[in-house]
Amino acid sequence: MYRLYEENDFDFSICRGTPTIYISDIDETYLKTDFRTIRGLITTTFQYAIDRIVYPGMSEFYRTIKKDGDSALFFLSSSPHQMKELFRRKLLLEEVPYDGMVLRDLVHLLATGGTTEMRNPFGFKLFATLKLAASFPDGSRIVLIGDDTESDAGVYEAFKRITDGSLGGGELSKILAGREIQDKNIAAIIATIGAAAGQGLEVTRIFIRDTGRGCGASGVVLFRHPGEMLDILIGDGVL
Image (cartoon, rainbow, N blue to C red; front, side, top):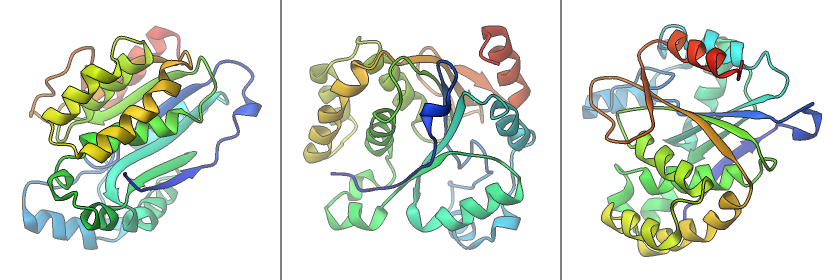
């Protein structure tokens, strides 16, 4: 089973109405990250917070959506939990208010034989999104934000289908097996879907940063600048 590092500091009891909850990836969604080379990965790992480069407009975007008192912002990343202090410092430097963070325990994953899932975070991200959503009030609106460098679009599409009841355990098990997810992790994911399916959660939008790699999922909105997301959210009446 996946082991997560979790922070969740939002008090939903303060919401005056139905909360809008944003779940955002970090690397290549918020911070520019070179995943394609070993050198890039090493450089990223040892950079200071002040050296990490933010995609233009993203910090302003997060600050804007948090102006609504009924909105919560969570960051969910497959990065190792050892990166949490760097991420915290960067968000502080950028004056981005956020309500929680979920990161991956890679050491535990390796120790339990999950080597095939090191470069394939699909199972972890789906499990973590479902587990995080279990803390949300019934009927919450959810906006998902990611990028096309890993598997965000597929994870978010699966999560949306789970919440609207169109994806059950049998079909999901086949999808996960096809992605070489360990049997015990498939079982852990299947065990979490009941709560999400019964909460009346509504995934209102799925935004995926377009870096030219393609996302291969339906129902997503590709963006290059966060202003595009703001325009759509305003048009939807979310902001």
